[in-house]
Length: 337
Image (cartoon, rainbow, N blue to C red):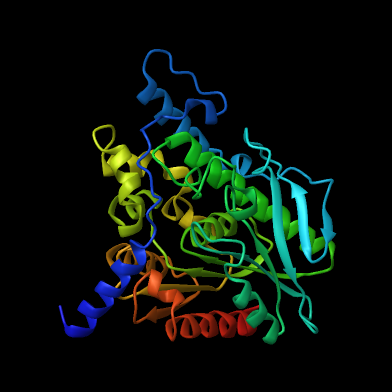
């Protein structure tokens, strides 16, 4: 490892371990989050069967029922999520609206990273405005204003509870589709998505299930949701909850409904240009998994561009890498949307 790589690795570790409120939560199959699942004496088998049905029926699983309470107040769009959880705070969707002066019908839904606060990606939304693109920054399930009072982090979106994690992804994806519908109702016809880290996964699954999208930006990429959780620096506490209960390979199967790899082929024939961004020294989305995405896009001949960041995951948010990243994303969307 060269001097630059060592420096980057040390800087990344310092940023990733700054928070001291991570909790190791107990493993749970989360049957109550899986509609229609019945253990019948063999919980593991029942969950795997339910997962296979969710994948095979993904159009219905990620279908977005109509919303009838959209309201825009003081620059914030709010509506009741079409998918409910036991937490009232989480069931109210918040999305900050940043209209560009001359957007020519172009709008992007922006999804920040895991555990982003309410200010995450606001600067990026304003930068998108400079490029003539309207932005709608949505808070994902259990994040910032949607976080239940019992939480300090968005643990319920990614945790060692198998079913709850799947449900949280489903809720976030369906909420994004509802945001796209609202934009469409306001006359925006050229719609795109921009997601970072966890938001990148939500954006990809949405893109695979919504043909209205003209392009997508996937900022940090991996084929499987489970691989990031199992090997990433920032999710070591989540992996601890799984150890002794499932393996990395089994978790890959269990979380197939929330993994980009499962739905990659749905992009064939779509002509939906994608910007795939990965970081050369990433210890959260390991480069080996990011390169699998790049190889798969090439193999399936899907239209895409690649941007490589000379940093890691958390350092993407630091100068000068945040500007490199932001400008690359904005230029792509200006040219492709």
